[in-house]
Image (cartoon, rainbow, N blue to C red; front, side, top):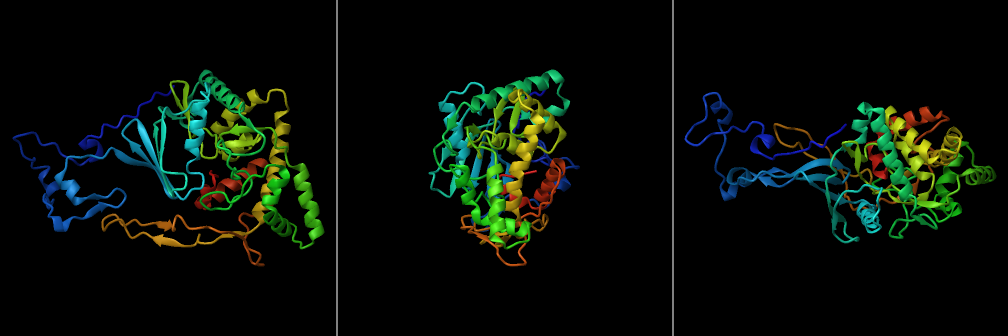
Length: 420
């Protein structure tokens, strides 16, 4: 059973492993003296130099202060970074993401509703207006470890407990409904189900009806069908598109959905789920979306075992295998056609090149930018255009493996909310 153990002391030896303690009245030992040869202990105003471009730490700070930073980078993706603030808080520094403040909006909504079975972080505060290109969100740190790290060694009784808690959370979440797909604040909901465009955020919205939904991606679907069936016959394309619409799962009821629920976003401690995190994709989706989303993001046997148990509780009366088959096949058929369509986004090939970090640490990457550039979505109608993804008729497991390999080879696609 997991126990919350994170405790950064932020002492000199914790942050600077080579630091040497020198008691008052003593000198460096003969063994330690060579380690400090050439070390400078004075900085003139004219020779101030930045030592770390990530935080702005200079040689003056290094020499003239006792300060040891308690802000530490914990996780980074695309143009955003998650920093630890001591042991109990974290801060998201986000930019260039269309949904970057949705985590905060959903958290506030659920807090105001005084939910009982949906575990949330205790505090969350956002700094910056909705129109700002940058948002800073400070939140309590979820106490515990991701369930993905705990599940493999948990007892059957512990697993049953986690399942019961997660089922209760999803059931309470689904009590909140809307007449059509939308965010909790009523805004339009980006499509995190069908299109994968490979940019910072999704390019398409989910329509209020299935007809609207398909209309939002009509050009891409027609281009994809033409390429899939190697045809320019409009009548055949119309026929195939009609079939996809008619076979697509019903949308209603539209229920509040996490949108990225997986064992990595469930934090547990001592047998209890302490928080479900990462609500950036949340909104009122079709009732089947959570199951589809989870199936697309579950790549391990442990994750599959967890959610097999969860769905068995939420859908005890139906034939789960048939539901799996019909949902997977009908949604995948549309996704597959969309992904046959070659799309481009202006500016995605523009990069800044990072120079090496320093002479002794010569690593340097790339920065796609500028991060506020308009990435105009366009369909490539050239004969030599490459599809976003070239899917074939795989079984469910083969399809998932192909998707996993595709995302690993194209990490920029995770910006659209999809990840292996």
